[in-house]
Image 1 (cartoon, rainbow, N blue to C red):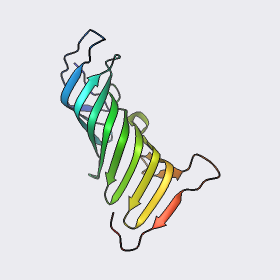
Image 2: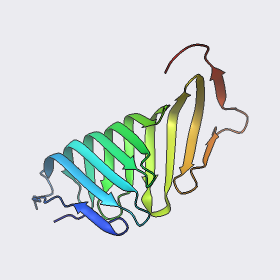
Image 3: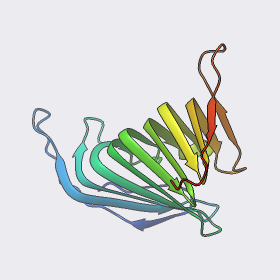
Image 4: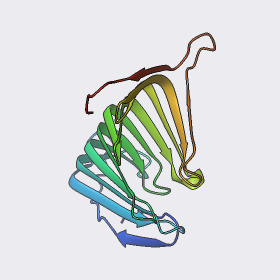
Length: 171
């Protein structure tokens, strides 16, 4: 039995039948985990397919959708082609075709690392941020889920974040 453990409560448990032969995959279809943290934020992650990796605490997910419902009812939706989900601490690394939606903000990139143990999110690899009429191109966006502050920057000191204003264009 794999049980998600984040903060104080687990909403749903997923029973998994594991294949003890390491040469064969441990595939799961239509997998879903739900958890709440001690600040009453909720995390839901769903995937069409999951493969329990050798350590049995990591699940390689395909066709992934995650929803973070903050304690103030604000919702962040993340979709990706792939993710690695840690069943012990809910940390999740999303990869390929990542799309994040938060209110009127949309971000696309190739990778996102969510670290629930310290409430940090890092988006990187071809980051494109859109908000109403503003578009930003950057290497990295770091978000603190507790303070809701963010840091947007480039990896090379001699390059700058590119900001564009779009006139009368919707996202």
